[in-house]
Length: 141
Ligand SMILES: [Zn+2]
Ligand SMILES: [Zn+2]
Ligand SMILES: [Zn+2]
Image (tube, rainbow, N blue to C red; front, side, top):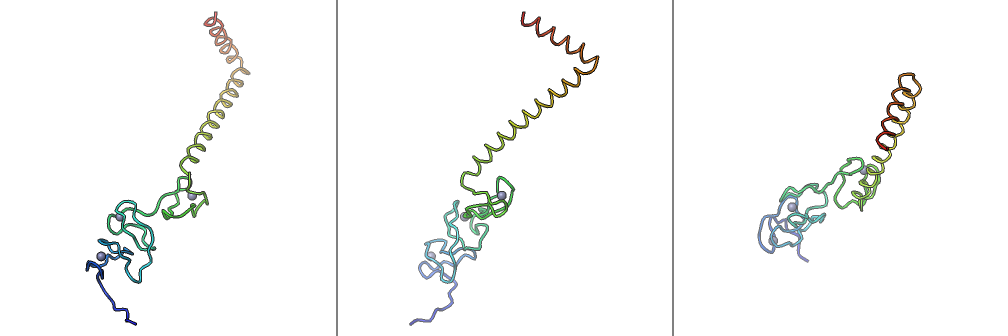
């Protein structure tokens, strides 16, 4: 049995080991004693499991949750902050935003109706509303 000797270079190509990679930057051979994490989507180097940023191209391995802004690892299935699954999160966020803006529009409409009601309750509002209705009737006729 051969004793593991400390090496500071790739046993295949001789390149010095990158500090934050789990595999040789040049020939992709796993570096002994390092735990492979994510493969950088940008430069395809294999980073160590604790790397949060690619040591080669500086690509961030974290992403912000679209719901709460919490930073999570790219490989995380769900946000550690709000527990929303990342799968389809963008689409869900869009749907919710649309629903929220619809609700807001409806809320504004309801508010407008109540303002109109208040105006109608006052004497000046009544003449104002009367004029408004006259205009509507005229424009229809
Ligand atoms: Zn190598
Ligand atoms: Zn990279
Ligand atoms: Zn979140």
